[in-house]
Length: 227
Ligand SMILES: Nc1nc2c(ncn2[C@@H]2O[C@H](COP(=O)(O)OP(=O)(O)OP(=O)(O)O)[C@@H](O)[C@H]2O)c(=O)[nH]1
Image: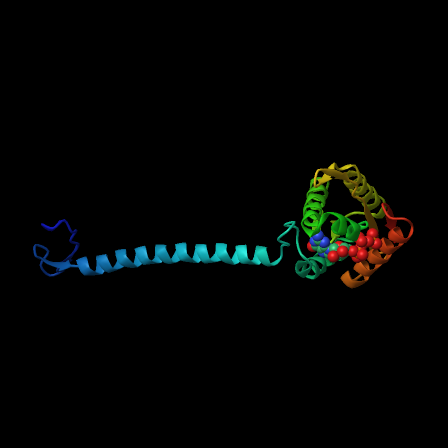
């Protein structure tokens, strides 16, 4: 230790002679600079690791924001194709069914016209919460459009999907919704398609679910139709 509190490092090397066992050569080397440089490098490396971890967190946050809908925090349509490709590949490999449920709020334009767009937004938010609360851990929910939701149900057959969609329909119908202190009835219609019966690509399955939804609307709304 020096007078000003710094550590000094020395390296001591001893060399013995074969011809003269009683003699030995001692070499002492001041390696303080080298040790200090190693210490500094270690600190800089730690700081770099911390910065890399922060960048990774930020990257994850940005990625998460880019695939989520800000109003409902459900996944957005941008993520849907990527997700469905992955899930369909899994379903194909494991020979499991996969259900696609398209849900749409009924007469939403009327609600907007009567209570305003802000109230409409609150209703969309509330419905998203209901759907999330009533879904299984494996179900993945998307906000597909304005008042349209899409749910992907891996490893789910037609009767299970019908049962789940019916459960969502009933929960939304029975939900207590107040708009400007007035109770309003919210209902939804749903269309379902199943892999592999109704299609083998994301495009075909979504189109089939959309057609089933159209039938549910045409048949009077507030109902679930299987493709
Ligand atoms: N508040 C709110 N309204 C939205 C949003 N996106 C779409 N809309 C409104 O939702 C309404 C959808 O109207 P339509 O497509 O005619 O459907 P609908 O009135 O629900 O009728 P059906 O679907 O046939 O039962 C339109 O008035 C859109 O302006 C949104 O993010 N927030």
